[in-house]
Amino acid sequence: MSSRTVIRGGLVITASDEIHADVLIEDGRIAALAVPGTQNWTADRTIDATGKYVIPGGVDAHTHMELPFGGTFASDTFETGTRAAAWGGTTTIVDFAVQSVGHTLREGLDAWHAKAEGNCAIDYGFHMIVSDVNQETLKEMDLLVEEGVTSFKQFMAYPGVFYSDDGQILRAMQRSAENGGLIMMHAENGIAIDVLVEQALARGETDPRYHGEVRKALLEAEATHRAIKLAQVAGAPLYVVHVSAMEAVAELARARDEGLNVFGETCPQYLFLSTDNLAEPDFEGSKYVCSTPLRPREHQAKLWQGLRTNDLQVVSTDHCPFCFVGQKELGRGDFSKIPNGLPGVENRMDLLHQGVVDGHISRRRWIEIACATPARMFGMYPKKGTIAPGADADVVIYDPHAEQIVSAETHHMNVDYSAYEGKRLTGRVETVLSRGELVISEREYTGRAGHGTYTPRSTCQYLN
Image 1 (cartoon, rainbow, N blue to C red):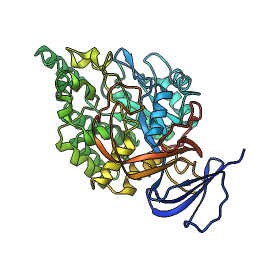
Image 2 (cartoon, rainbow, N blue to C red; image 1 turned 120 degrees about the horizontal axis):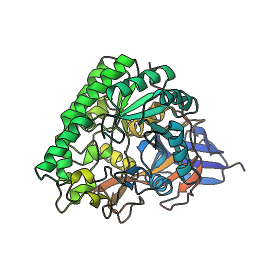
Image 3 (cartoon, one colour; image 1 turned 135 degrees about the vertical axis):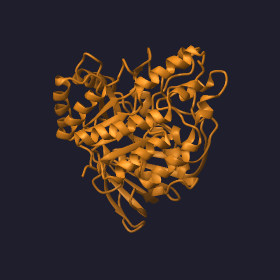
Image 4 (cartoon, helix red, strand yellow; image 1 turned 120 degrees about the vertical axis):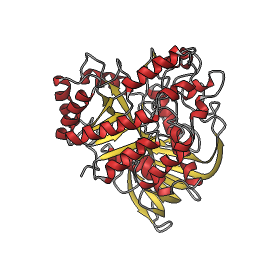
């Protein structure tokens, strides 16, 4: 069945342009753009976008649906999580498949395919968490790159769980230098942090706020520096996830000034929340426990600056929700047992638009860091991340003037609190198309589990 949709009268915003244009969608793809009113296109469906923005669907390159962690599981399934993503204007996620120690990459990837297949409302891809570097794993990395899993995450944190030592990291980086893969690094000195955790607990410092105090910004910066140097030795590109500290931004900026293929991602929680949230009384601070942790407020300005200067290139969510009741509460009396992660997949596009309203970034930069760059970084551009002939018709009609108050009462993530409860935002998603199909239609969910398809990816499109 052939289908045609026309979106009329909106301001089309991409990473490179802002133009008033009508958009023709045919069989799930963008077919043409034209000066408003100049084409008498016939269509099955016409959407009036007068006074609205027409933007590419968001690409969230860092989510954890159904992730096992700390004796429990992230509370969003692929079904609930991708539906919530769509409500927030995100039309593609890249989630993390996990290799367990003693198991192969393939076993981990197969397990994640089984979780996601037939359940997603929007398109999805996978990165691979490498927890067990050995000769077999290294060979498997080559095979995964060939089939479209082109990025591998390693952890300098979480000894005994995901942790890799410098030798394992170097070996994986050397392999990715050969096969074109991209190493994504959780850069925190986990060995040193564990010492500080043990000492804090021994002093009776058990509240959530101590989570932020033991995971020091200097240990994020040190690990970031070390990861950069290991990548340099290996001749490999490096992508540092969830950068939260100004000292880590400085390390990235220095490496980029030297011409290295080093990239950085931050998340909305680091741009809008702070250690003030971790210090909220009555264990409320546990809602904000994630790693890297929230930082003192003065780091926010440096992160926004990094986004403006392109020392940071991407904003993803690291969406990893745990309910306050029954999950976050596992850490009452011991902050080290609070499951690490917070919900955000539904809030990212709106929070970043608030960054535009507040004067931190331009409209085009908003689309660049939320749509185009993550698509390029992870080998999905121009199929994803832009509005241009031939691209997938992942399109959001965005009302830049609508006012909203963020609340767990109204969000669609499967979690019992919002990290941004009560925050007033200007701008809201109105209509969302995924490959030309309406998923959100004028604030009504019209999508379905199983519409979203798996998206194999090419290698990073920024490597020089």
